[in-house]
Image (cartoon, rainbow over the protein chains, first blue to last red):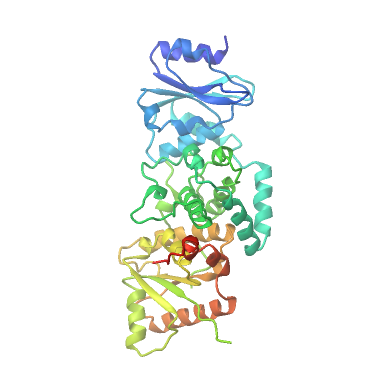
Length: 267
Length: 152
């Protein structure tokens, strides 16, 4: 019996948590999220190199929340998601029991936000180098080439909203996409609505994205839409000194201001 | 050949730029008639989706203008707007939308001359760049084309 199963069983038995979010074997050789409520179910839990999904997205889902006090198996992205959700007053300190899976398979417990913050400070939370290269490649293009690139990518979009469902930061009860009075985003999967939808999503995630990449992983059409939000991370850090998902008491960059914010395009 | 007349939409705040544009008129200063002014309570209210709607409906250029920093009627509206524009401009640029076509400016209620300059210069610039063909290809008018219906 693995350490994880032992640990989760103990947590469930002494009522520290009522449910645990982890990974189990899915169909074929896929891994999927699972919600463990008792000792029998705990036997399904697995932990290996393929377990990369950011499970923090489930923490705010209504069906999961009503299970009671939650425990979660977290990776670095999930820890950052939890920090960002905390800074947006979506999770209270001590509300979630976090088990972090180290690279060697051992587990680290986090019961409060301070310890997560301390851990993240010494951890690499940056964007993967291939994604950085892709952003640099796009930035080197002309505006027109970029337009053609994204037009081609957005053309594939089938408006399934999997990116929105997978994103731990997309927790609004009523998304702008669903609003039809006025109809901000045309519903048809036409280039216009697709462009609107993706720019709206990127803008609403600007300064909040914790670069977990779940949106691009979830996309059935393989649109690299994580690049849209990733690209905004460095300018927001450079201009406003803000990084998402590092501190539980951080202030969202776009809901505050400094009288001397620098720009060079307003006449 | 007839000269290209760009369609420019100006989103302005009620307290400074709108009053400034009014002063331009009462001072009998002439400026390009290509601009359609839309009044908002504050630059803080000018959501990025509203700017995208202008392009979608066939605008070739956009002007966004409000009170100078520290002059906001609501104290902080333009400071918040400025942060949003900094981020939004980055996103537009990265997604291939021509940021040359959006002119941001601060025009106070006393700057009638500046408003005329901002409009004239923007119209001149957009006239040189030409119609926004990239966006027009996917504009609202194309949504209903196949059914033969007209766009309201």
